[in-house]
Image 1 (spheres, one colour):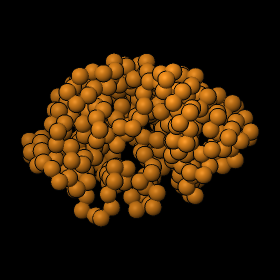
Image 2 (cartoon, rainbow, N blue to C red):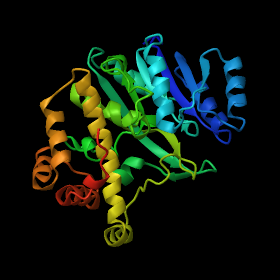
Image 3 (cartoon, helix red, strand yellow):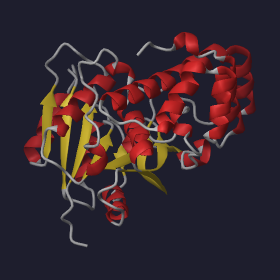
Image 4 (cartoon, one colour):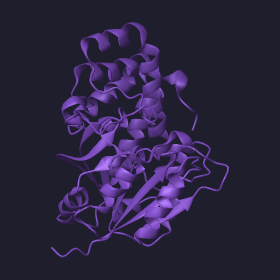
Length: 328
C-alpha cells in the first residue's frame, strides 16, 4: 500500500519539559511518515515552548499553538485544540498524544493499516494495549490489558465504567471526528469532559469500536499525570480497604464517569443524535437503584475483575453516586 493516507496528531502540553523531547522524537521516528502534529500549549512556565519551537522549526509537519486566553485546564485545552482541528484541513485519521509518553515506532502504521480495510464511511475508533513506564523509562507493566482487561469491553460497559479506551492509545477516523461537533471550549462543563470518553461513547452509538491486542505505546506514569490517581491492579488488600474506607471515593469516581456520560448524551441530543441506547443509559444513571441495576444487567455490564464489576453494580443499586452528580 502506498503511503498516501494523511493523519493528524493532536497533542496538548503544559510544563512538560522533562519528557517532551522523547515523545516528539518517538513521533518523528515513526515508520509512517505522512502525518501532521498540531500542539497547543496551555501557558507553560518552563522550557516547554522553547522545545516545541525548536522542533517545529526543524520539522514543517509540526505546528505549535499557544493558549492566550484566561481559560486553562487539561480537558479544556484539548477541546480548544479539537475545535481548531475541526475547522482545519480534513484528514483521514486522528490521533491523540500525551506530552510524556513514548510511541513505539510502528504505532501509526499498525493503526492505519488496520483501519484501511474497514469501511471509511462508518464511524470508527481503534485502540490498543499499552505498556506502562516510570520516570526512568523502565517498563513497570508489560500489558495494561492483562491488568485491567481493557480489551474485554462487555456490552455497553464503557457508559458506566470508563476504563477501557485511553486517548493516547486510540485513533478515530474522519467519519467519527465529523459526526458531531466538538464540545465548545467555553462550555461551563468543559473541564470535566474528557475527549477519549466522549469519542468512545459517540462511536458506540454510531459506529464500531475495535481493540488491538498489542502494546503500541509506552504510557508514562508519574506524580504530574492528570490521571496519576488511577489504580491499576486491585489486590485483595486494596479491595478490602476500598470496602472499609474508600466507598465514598468509589461513589465519587463513578459519579465522574456518569457526569461525562450524561454530558455526552446531552451534547449528542442537542445535535440531533438520539438512540434508544442513550435514552436507556440516561434512565439508568438518573434513576439508579433497582431500575439502574436491571439496565446494567440488560446492557451486560462487566469488568474483567470481579471486584470492579461488583463495585459498579453496588454503587448503582445503592444510588451512592447521585449526590455527586452535576446537573447538566
